[in-house]
Amino acid sequence: MEVYKISILSFFISMILSIIGIPFLLNMLKDNNCLCINYKNEEIPSSMGLLFIIVQTITLSLMNLFIAEDLRHYVLIYLVAFILVGLVGLLDDLVGDKNVKGFKGHIKSLLKGKLTTGGLKASVGFLVALIISLYISNSIIETIINTLLISLFTNLINLFDLRPGRASKVFILVSIILLITSWYDDLSILLFSFFGILFRYLPIDLKANAMMGDVGSNSLGITLGAYCAITHDLKIKIIYLVVLIAVQMLSEFVSFSKIIEKNKFLRYIDNLGR
Image (tube, rainbow, N blue to C red; front, top):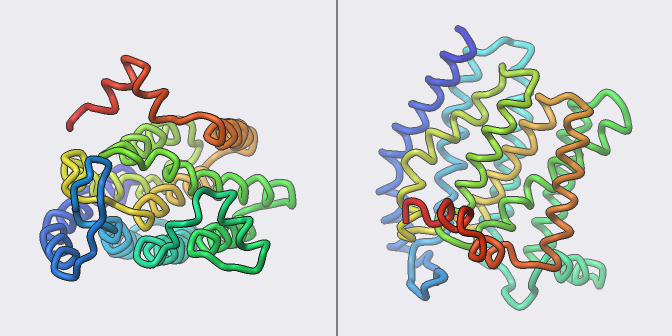
């Protein structure tokens, strides 16, 4: 089956599964008091990113039967990492220590011998990125670059998951850029499957009727990182890495929300659909 047909099919399978699953998942979270306070101080279901883990895993497990045999191990490696990162994100959503803030705070606690859910999330994220890189890299330098790339992409979505729909919009934008710069489109199902999920989920997020949580932002981020690491030339990956490092450093000094609010075009895109 041609690559574009597999990608389109993965989109529709994910979309249908999301349409069916979202009402059940929303009710389950409400019934079990899995709620959080959004930026408007409204109580809404949290950890809806659990939908991403369930649907993406089912869709890609099915579609893996139709892609070339020499590519199937990439999908399986991705899914193992994807589920594990989603799991620690869900743990952080449910029992996370809200007194420790930011990446630096969790790392400081870890160095002092105290494991926080944020520290666990960072540690597992790095180890997962390293494991993926060991499988797909051809040299030590490439392993280091891929590990940093996947780790920083995983954290990227977290930086923007502060307003309804923003994380999903960033994911879609970066995905389109990655599809354009990729030299290898046989694994585009990793992204198109997610597009199918977001087609149904994004309107709910935009209206602030649910929050994806860390389980959602983590799974979005590692998908971008894994796709970039597997399908891009080393030189292009270095460019992405430099940009990601710059964004990460910038986030320590400025508020992206304030930057978006002050820019008319960015504010328009950010508010689109709300």
